[in-house]
Image (cartoon, rainbow, N blue to C red):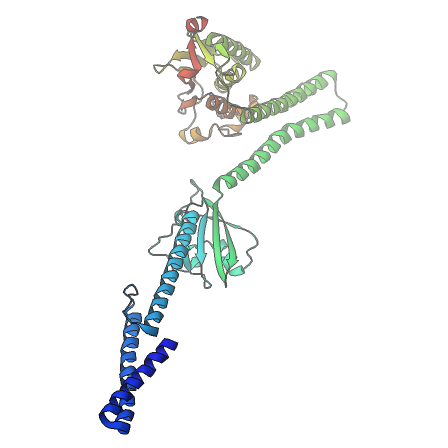
Amino acid sequence: MAARLFAFLLCLAAGGLAGWWLGHDRGAAAGVAAGATAWFIFETQRSARVLRWLRSGDLRAVPRAGGLWGEAAQRARRLLALREAQLAEARARLQDFLSAIQRSPNGVVLLDAGGAIEWFNDTAAAQFGFDPQRDLQQHIVHLVREPDFSAYYHGRNFAQDVVIAAPGSSAARPLKLAVRLHPYGEGRLLLLARDVTAVEQAEVMRRDFVANVSHEIRTPLTVLGGFVETLQHLELSRDEQARYLQLMAQQAQRMQTLVSDLLTLSRLEGSPLPAAAEWTPAPQLLAQCEQEARALAAALDKTLDLRFGPAPPLLVGGIASELLSALSNLVSNAVRYTPGGGSVEVQTRALPDGGVEFAVRDTGPGIAAEHLPRLTERFYRVDRSRSRETGGTGLGLAIVKHVVQRHGGELRIDSRPGAGSTFAIRLPARRVRVQAEAAE
Ligand code: ADP
C-alpha cells in the first residue's frame, strides 16, 4: 500500500516538476493534474485487464498486472485453485458414496421434498423397473402404483415397512418388496426397498405347514375321541368293544406314522449332507424293500404281481437308513395305489455315466400332468381319500425328494392317467461303487 502511495506521489511530483519546468506555477499545477490523470488511466487499464480475466471464466491464464491489481489477481487465482481442488475432492467422495450405494443389495431412491425422484441405484431400477433416462424427476407415486404404497406415502407415517408386490410380480413368480421411507434433510425422503420374496414364501409355507399338521392330527384325534366317548357311555358287547378298540388302534397308528414322518423330514432338513462313507450293497437294500412290500400287500389284503429285478453288484454310498426309506416309500406307494390284480416292478440298473437308477413301475391309476410338479410338496395328494384309506401321510414323496437331493441325485416321475406310474431314483457316479472294486 505504501509502495502504491509512493508511486502515486512520484507520478504527481514528476508531473508537477515537468509542468514547473515548462510553465512555472501554472505549469506545475497542470503537470500535477496530468500526472494524476496518467496514474488514473494506467490504474484503470490494469483493473480492466483483471476484470476481463475474471469475466472470461478461464482462470488459468492470470493477466500480467503488477501492483495491487496483480496481487489481487494472483490471490484470486490461488483461492480459486484451492476451491477447485476442494470441489474435485468433494466430487470424488460423492462418487465413492454413490458407488457404495450402487453396490447395496437393497434398492435406494432419493426423493426431493415434493416426492420427485432425484436419484436411484441399479437395484432399485431392477426392483421397480425404473429407467434412468425417463424416470428421474417423476413423482414416486406415479411410478410405484401399488395402492398400499400410495396410502403409505400419503399417510406420512413411516415407522414401519410396507410390503408390496413388485412390478412384474405374478401368481406363478411372486416378487415381494418391503419398502420403507426415511425422512432426511429438509422434507426429503430416502426410500429403501428389500426383496422379501423368499422370506414371505417361507412364512406362507410355515403357516400352511402348521395348518396342515394340525388338520392331519385333528382328524384321527376327533375319531379317537368319539370312540372313547362311545366306550364310556354305551354298554357294548365284547365283540363290539374289540372292533372299536381295533379302529382306535388304527387311528393311533395313523398319528404315529404322521409324527414319525414329520420327525424324519425335520431330521433330514437339520442334518449335514451325508458323506459317501457308508456303503450298502444294492441287493441288500432291495431285499429289505421287497420284504416290506410283500408285508404291506398282505396287510392291505391285495394280490399284486410284485417283481423285483436282479440287482447289479453295486454298493451305494450315503446313509443306508435314508436310502432305504426313500426306496421303500416309492415301493409302498406303488403297492398302496395299484389296485389288486395289478403289478409292481422294481428295476435297478447301472447308468452309462457311472450312476445307478432304481425304478419303481406300477400299473396303478397314473397321475395327471398338472399334479406331477406338486407331488413332492408336503401333504400334497392327488386322491385324498385313497391316500388316507391306505395309511398315507402325504409326506412320503417329500421325504424321498429330500433324501435323493441330499445324496446329490434326482427323483424322476413319469406317469399318465390310466397308464401307470414310474418313480425313479437316480444317484450320481460318486455314490456308486462296483462291489468287487470295494473289496479290493
Ligand atoms: P401319500 O402318503 O399320500 O401317499 P406321498 O407323498 O407318498 O403321500 O404321495 C403324494 C401323492 O402322490 C399321493 O397322495 C398320491 O395321490 C400320489 N401318488 C404317489 N405315488 C403314486 C403312485 N404310485 N400311483 C398313483 N399316485 C401316486
